[in-house]
Amino acid sequence: MPAIVKRLTAAGLVDVDYAAASLDEAAEFEPRYGVYTLSNTYHCTQALLLDAHLDRLEDSARREGFALRYDRRRLKQALRRMIEDSGYGDARFRISIPGDRPSEMLLSIEPFQPPTLDVLHQGASCNTSAEVARLNPAAKASEWMHIRKRLAAARPPHIYETFIVDADGDILEGLSSNFYAIEDGELRTAGAGVLAGISRQIVLEICAPIIPPRLEAPRRANIPHFSEAFLTSSSRGIIPVVEIDGISIGGGFAGKITGQLREAYERWVAVHLEEL
Image (cartoon, rainbow, N blue to C red; front, side, top):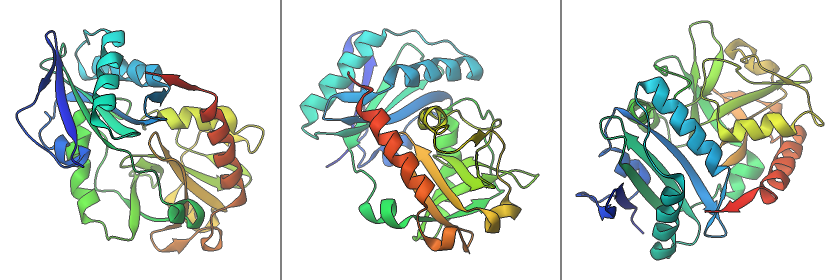
């Protein structure tokens, strides 16, 4: 089923002048100057922390040099209408705002495909790259969708995600995720120079009874010493990482602590869903 893209204007939802098979393909038609957020629905019309997504959207716009002018209630109603009319059931959606037309929004949806059981149980193989960096890390800027595509397209089929490494050798975040390593009994993740992911906020809230957090970027040189690793994103939750740059982590198996965190994460999600 193709993606559905509409523009939310003062007159309501209107069709765009292009068609796309997916959200990734639709991104090609979106302006480089702007901001966006991306998530998915549960039980068709429920969402997780959508207001937090919109708070970050507004903050990202300020960081990119423009202010948003929109009605949240009207936005949620329009998104709900698109999802109900699509017949997709659970949907993955993106809200994009062009910087030169901040009073308009692009709403894109596609059927939601949850992570496969294979990647959840067996973990993901990933790689690192020092070739790119976010120009404005704290902002979810539309330009990043275009910058990251080259790297994502170039990685081998078995590589699930690429993690950005800075000049000091710190692993900051993924092209579309936050990154975490368990090392010396601590949960380590970058505290600066990264996008504050919504799923990351949940992980940092739930992790204390399981493992103490430390806001310090794991180092690439220490990959052999990671006992476990994982990534998070809004539409994937917690995904175990069992290999980085060909180096096995945790013997190549999804770790026990990662599993405990995923269970706690899913319990947290179940009681915090809200209707659009």
